[in-house]
Amino acid sequence: MEKRLTGQLDVLKKNAVDFLPLDEIASKFSQSLKTKTPLRLKIGFDPTAADIHLGHTVLLRKLRKLQDLGHMVFLIIGDFTAKIGDPSGKTALRPMLSDKEIQKNAGTYTSQAFKILDKKRTKVIYNSVWYKKMTLTDFLPLLKSYTVARMLERDDFSKRFSENKPLALLELIYPLIQGYDSVMCDADIEFGGTDQKFNLLVGRHLQEVFNKPRQGIVTMPILVGLDGENKMSKSLNNYIGVTESSGNMFGKIMSISDESMKEYYKLLTDISPQDYKELHPKAAKINLAKEIVSFYFSKETAQKEHDNFESVFSKKQVPEKMVSIAVFENEINLIDIFSKNKIVTTNNEARRLIQQGSVAILNADGSVLEIVKDQILRLKERETILKIGKKRFIKIVR
Image (cartoon, rainbow, N blue to C red; front, top):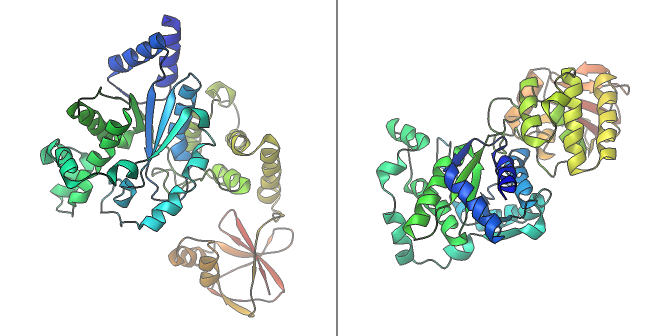
């Protein structure tokens, strides 16, 4: 049994940052093996956006490996906590989402998570199940269990407080509400990113308050986004969603920095550094893109996207498939076109791309015919191919 325990702990520790406390966690694994009882592994996601991205999968991949060892994952969908939004790392109060927005976002979370997790070893729970039944009298012991001084030990809270920036009571109680989920699902170990450490410790504390065994805590590194600086985030538009098209996924991975590539290999694949460190950076990045696209689609699809990428970016050809937009005028406002068809996230982004000379009219072979210098474009042909930035192509048809 000692060998099996060591093996399970090795799986748990790989790439992880915190194990709090390690002796308790080891004891939980040992007891699980002795009694042949699966550990209850908790992870929670607030559906504040519709997509699960590769940043989320760092945790999901870890949990899948533990599921393969026989343990159960309790996937908490925070349809109640999403109303507040996790304030971790935020400098201002999040806007409050409507029930309709939350339900829409939560609708696909499980199917996205099951691209990685084993459905048979996953219990999905919406935390509104217990919060909608909770009365104010039930809630008061939660508020009593933690002091304001302890909440202000959080770096982001203390910084905002010291800088006289608004800090809502709603944000202060968020860690309590998230932590209470651990009480309700009797979590043995809770997993989160390093930015979640404070919240996970609150969950451990609340279990003790409510006379439950305290959960262990495991944190994983935060995956950097496409900008190479900030954490991968939908709000920063620097993410790769697990439901994106294979072409978008391949192209976005090819756009990451060489330094980020090492972290992506480490956190998103099982490929050892020995298998790619001798490769040229471009070849290593292609290998990474093919590996990830193969996982979410197939090896055949990954090879097809590789071939398409080479033809478009190395040989400067136009991709076979692109967004086609029908118009009826000879003159069009590119900012309106880009915005309405979700080519860009904001009008300012569209305006900046044009001002920087990053929008071009292409010839059929992919060579540049003309750099677009104004947001009003006069169409000279029935079909006009535009390249926006480095990897976006659209066809304007009138």
